[in-house]
Length: 161
Figure 1 (cartoon, helix red, strand yellow):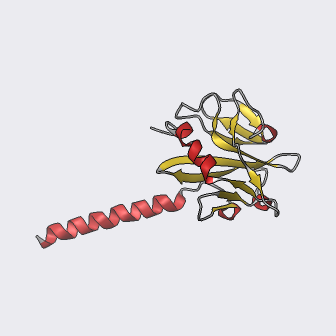
Figure 2 (spheres, helix red, strand yellow):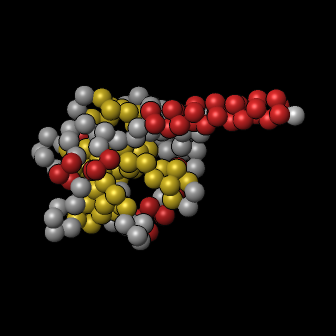
Figure 3 (cartoon, helix red, strand yellow):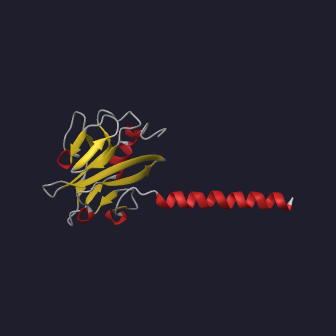
Protein backbone atom coordinates (compact mmCIF):
# COMPACT_ATOMS: atom_id res chain seq x y z
CA UNK A 1 0.00 0.00 0.00
CA UNK A 2 2.78 2.47 0.67
CA UNK A 3 4.05 2.05 -2.89
CA UNK A 4 0.57 2.80 -4.24
CA UNK A 5 0.33 5.90 -2.03
CA UNK A 6 3.74 7.08 -3.26
CA UNK A 7 2.65 6.67 -6.88
CA UNK A 8 -0.56 8.65 -6.25
CA UNK A 9 1.38 11.34 -4.43
CA UNK A 10 3.91 11.60 -7.27
CA UNK A 11 1.08 11.86 -9.81
CA UNK A 12 -0.59 14.58 -7.74
CA UNK A 13 2.66 16.55 -7.56
CA UNK A 14 3.14 16.19 -11.33
CA UNK A 15 -0.39 17.41 -12.08
CA UNK A 16 -0.05 20.36 -9.70
CA UNK A 17 3.32 21.27 -11.23
CA UNK A 18 1.85 21.22 -14.74
CA UNK A 19 -1.14 23.29 -13.64
CA UNK A 20 1.11 25.88 -11.99
CA UNK A 21 3.38 26.04 -15.02
CA UNK A 22 0.42 26.47 -17.38
CA UNK A 23 -1.33 29.10 -15.29
CA UNK A 24 1.91 31.07 -14.95
CA UNK A 25 2.30 31.32 -18.73
CA UNK A 26 -1.26 32.37 -19.54
CA UNK A 27 -1.46 36.16 -19.86
CA UNK A 28 -4.45 38.24 -20.78
CA UNK A 29 -3.03 41.72 -20.82
CA UNK A 30 0.39 43.19 -21.25
CA UNK A 31 0.06 45.29 -18.12
CA UNK A 32 -1.91 44.07 -15.12
CA UNK A 33 -1.53 47.54 -13.55
CA UNK A 34 -3.72 48.95 -16.31
CA UNK A 35 -6.96 47.86 -14.65
CA UNK A 36 -8.62 46.71 -11.44
CA UNK A 37 -12.05 45.94 -10.07
CA UNK A 38 -13.44 47.63 -7.00
CA UNK A 39 -15.47 46.05 -4.18
CA UNK A 40 -18.75 46.71 -6.03
CA UNK A 41 -17.49 44.83 -9.09
CA UNK A 42 -16.97 47.92 -11.24
CA UNK A 43 -14.10 47.69 -13.72
CA UNK A 44 -11.65 50.59 -13.55
CA UNK A 45 -9.23 51.06 -16.46
CA UNK A 46 -6.24 53.32 -15.79
CA UNK A 47 -6.05 55.21 -19.08
CA UNK A 48 -2.47 56.37 -18.51
CA UNK A 49 -1.42 52.70 -18.81
CA UNK A 50 -3.25 51.99 -22.09
CA UNK A 51 -1.14 52.11 -25.25
CA UNK A 52 -1.61 51.47 -28.98
CA UNK A 53 -1.22 47.76 -28.17
CA UNK A 54 -4.65 46.47 -27.13
CA UNK A 55 -5.13 45.28 -23.59
CA UNK A 56 -7.49 42.34 -23.05
CA UNK A 57 -9.04 42.38 -19.59
CA UNK A 58 -10.39 39.01 -18.45
CA UNK A 59 -13.42 39.04 -16.17
CA UNK A 60 -15.56 36.49 -14.39
CA UNK A 61 -19.10 37.78 -13.97
CA UNK A 62 -21.52 35.44 -12.22
CA UNK A 63 -19.26 32.52 -13.14
CA UNK A 64 -19.13 33.49 -16.83
CA UNK A 65 -15.96 34.44 -18.70
CA UNK A 66 -15.89 37.68 -20.63
CA UNK A 67 -13.30 40.22 -21.76
CA UNK A 68 -13.01 43.94 -22.24
CA UNK A 69 -10.67 45.33 -24.88
CA UNK A 70 -8.93 48.70 -24.35
CA UNK A 71 -6.73 50.44 -26.91
CA UNK A 72 -5.36 53.95 -27.46
CA UNK A 73 -6.35 55.33 -30.87
CA UNK A 74 -4.27 57.67 -33.02
CA UNK A 75 -6.22 60.65 -31.62
CA UNK A 76 -4.87 59.66 -28.14
CA UNK A 77 -8.34 58.67 -26.89
CA UNK A 78 -8.71 55.35 -25.10
CA UNK A 79 -11.37 53.19 -26.73
CA UNK A 80 -13.08 50.32 -24.92
CA UNK A 81 -15.31 47.53 -26.19
CA UNK A 82 -16.39 44.06 -25.22
CA UNK A 83 -14.00 41.56 -26.78
CA UNK A 84 -16.67 40.21 -29.10
CA UNK A 85 -18.14 41.22 -32.43
CA UNK A 86 -21.63 42.77 -32.70
CA UNK A 87 -22.60 40.47 -35.57
CA UNK A 88 -20.56 37.36 -34.74
CA UNK A 89 -21.12 37.41 -30.94
CA UNK A 90 -22.97 34.08 -30.92
CA UNK A 91 -19.97 32.27 -32.42
CA UNK A 92 -17.18 30.76 -30.30
CA UNK A 93 -14.50 32.53 -32.39
CA UNK A 94 -16.14 35.97 -32.11
CA UNK A 95 -13.22 37.61 -30.36
CA UNK A 96 -10.41 39.92 -31.42
CA UNK A 97 -6.67 39.51 -31.63
CA UNK A 98 -4.22 42.39 -31.99
CA UNK A 99 -3.03 43.48 -35.40
CA UNK A 100 -0.91 46.52 -36.26
CA UNK A 101 -3.07 49.61 -35.65
CA UNK A 102 -6.14 47.77 -34.39
CA UNK A 103 -7.75 44.36 -33.95
CA UNK A 104 -9.06 41.57 -36.18
CA UNK A 105 -12.14 39.40 -35.56
CA UNK A 106 -11.18 35.73 -35.35
CA UNK A 107 -14.58 34.67 -36.70
CA UNK A 108 -15.11 36.87 -39.76
CA UNK A 109 -11.53 38.06 -40.31
CA UNK A 110 -12.48 41.74 -40.50
CA UNK A 111 -9.89 44.29 -39.37
CA UNK A 112 -10.93 47.23 -37.18
CA UNK A 113 -8.63 50.20 -36.64
CA UNK A 114 -8.30 51.43 -33.06
CA UNK A 115 -10.51 54.45 -33.90
CA UNK A 116 -13.49 52.13 -34.54
CA UNK A 117 -13.17 50.16 -31.30
CA UNK A 118 -16.14 50.96 -29.10
CA UNK A 119 -17.44 53.75 -31.33
CA UNK A 120 -19.13 52.14 -34.33
CA UNK A 121 -22.56 50.61 -33.89
CA UNK A 122 -25.00 48.44 -35.80
CA UNK A 123 -22.76 46.23 -37.85
CA UNK A 124 -19.70 44.07 -37.79
CA UNK A 125 -17.72 45.98 -35.16
CA UNK A 126 -16.30 45.43 -31.69
CA UNK A 127 -19.32 45.60 -29.36
CA UNK A 128 -19.42 49.02 -27.68
CA UNK A 129 -19.69 49.21 -23.89
CA UNK A 130 -22.64 51.40 -22.86
CA UNK A 131 -22.71 53.36 -19.60
CA UNK A 132 -18.98 54.03 -19.44
CA UNK A 133 -18.06 56.68 -16.89
CA UNK A 134 -14.89 58.77 -16.68
CA UNK A 135 -13.38 59.81 -13.35
CA UNK A 136 -11.79 63.17 -12.59
CA UNK A 137 -8.38 61.56 -13.08
CA UNK A 138 -9.41 60.31 -16.53
CA UNK A 139 -9.80 56.66 -15.62
CA UNK A 140 -12.61 54.73 -17.30
CA UNK A 141 -15.18 53.01 -15.12
CA UNK A 142 -17.48 50.29 -16.43
CA UNK A 143 -20.23 49.70 -13.87
CA UNK A 144 -20.82 46.16 -12.61
CA UNK A 145 -24.46 46.43 -13.77
CA UNK A 146 -23.30 46.98 -17.36
CA UNK A 147 -21.04 43.93 -17.16
CA UNK A 148 -23.89 41.85 -15.70
CA UNK A 149 -26.25 42.98 -18.46
CA UNK A 150 -23.87 41.70 -21.16
CA UNK A 151 -22.96 38.28 -19.74
CA UNK A 152 -25.34 36.54 -22.17
CA UNK A 153 -23.39 37.99 -25.10
CA UNK A 154 -20.49 35.71 -24.11
CA UNK A 155 -22.52 32.48 -23.73
CA UNK A 156 -20.65 30.70 -26.57
CA UNK A 157 -17.50 32.80 -26.44
CA UNK A 158 -14.30 30.76 -26.95
CA UNK A 159 -16.19 27.52 -26.23
CA UNK A 160 -14.48 24.44 -27.57
CA UNK A 161 -11.36 26.31 -28.70
